[in-house]
Length: 313
Image (cartoon, rainbow, N blue to C red; front, side, top):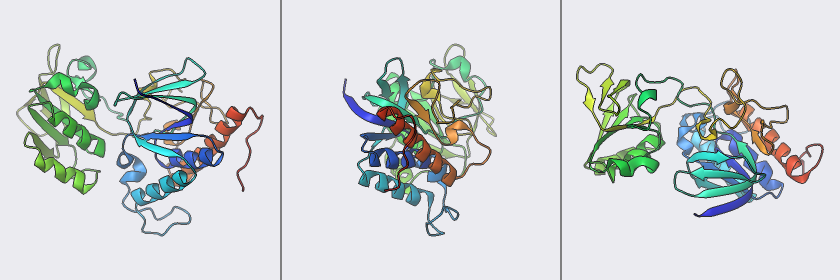
């Protein structure tokens, strides 16, 4: 198995993760950022950012993210397009698993995956997980060779996973719950070159049906069910994205990740920042500042200092 090592691994490339990368890289810590899809986060979906300090008033969310990423890279941080599927926190060196099969080891982790996780469970979803309900086409596409599947979501991740499934499944229905995708136009347009992919707009799944395995989907507003052998869900909501943590970290009653004043979690060496912590006010400038603070605490943790050191130089 391909394994990469680093000092700090940051999961999530939004404003919290990118800001953290700037500061850990400036501290001369080997920094790696894993981001499944920059377009899938709240900032990446924003058309215009008019209230972020120091930038022009018509900048888009993706432009701002690209600027943050470039700044972090200028200090030596490395960004990779990877979907994290699990973590192992038992040893001092933390292990991160991805859908591509790569394995990463880091002395410290910063979790900055945001809070756009699916917050509403679809009737039938829980009962059929692993029996036709999946959340990772890269992981499970090969099981649906020649079969009929559906992908539900509007992010770039949903578009990309539909493409992955098209190489295996006989038919792929991409169900977009709105009138447009929150993904680059060129990526959506490329679906038109795939003869076995049908894109259906304004299609929301009201229930997943089947006895022991997925058999069909009920679609809001449609009288007839959509018969499929499997369904891949990439729906967004307002829940913190912590599915990859596997219950290894302490959370609050609300389901939000619990951290201390230094942004450390219940496991030494694991820190968190941004909307994954849940907050009343969600602003890019706030989560960017938390990424900075978490990074300074990581530097303190790895150096063995008692206090975080300010980065003024």
